[in-house]
Length: 376
Image 1: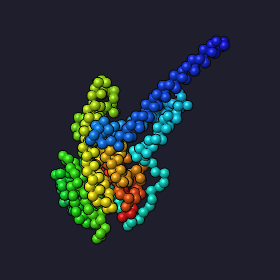
Image 2: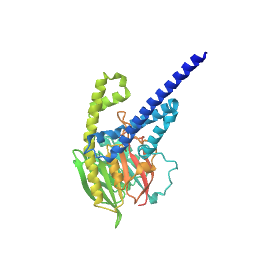
Image 3: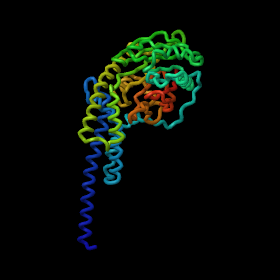
Image 4: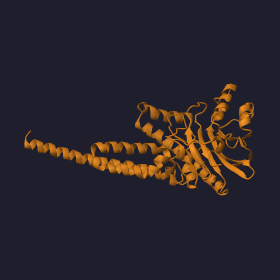
């Protein structure tokens, strides 16, 4: 190879490197800023900004974009990889909230000194409409040594048929389902007396119910069972989303995909605004009862990166899954929606030592979230 050819090849290589570096620098900053914007959207109430309401669901996509940018930058422009690394470091708190990883083994605690709370959107117990199916659910709840069982989308018949199973009735002598019409049959089964209930807030068929539980005189626990505003997606909407995610090649056109995306985002943002107001009302209720050991649980219909989830933490509650869980913890099991929308939060009177979403039961479109606490 002649000197001129080597020179041309060297110049061409340097030109490609400079171009690759420019492109990857722009792509890296774009993905990082998108990740930061989505992570920061939790600070803005969707009730005042529809855009903020729709951004949180984009968190896994923006995180994936940063990771892809990092991989390509390491390959094509390694000197610019610091941009993506900086972006991940600055968003590490949000990443851990969305997908926590615990590096220590779950702490072993004595059953007498712990509190096990199960929260489960039961889908109206629709898939347990036989005696065998009902018994299976009750035996499942008992299998975890559950102390308090909070359910959403229950059945008006639940307190009656659950009382027919001796083991369940013995474990949970106190069952309350006080507002079946206002809040889609949310209920609480407790080992200890439920001395008072209050409807904290409601909207259409969603709501939040407060259960005051008394283990002994002067030793009270406040449990808020939440079913925040649903996203109002019809079966057709969910089918379109499922097809868009799993079979994008079957979409008729780019315009069709954009139309579906905008329609879904609009519905999500509208519902998020209602959830934000409901979350604010929950916090206002908690502020009227300071110092009471508290657990807030249920179907939030919102991901961990959302205003409603952040609102609980800003009040000082601990995200139990973030503190003691592992992985994404998918709790909604339909339509390619790999998200955790069922949560548990606790006051500092408790310490979560184990939290998980059990993907075993198939009775509902949700999976139950189970948390073991110490401290009460």
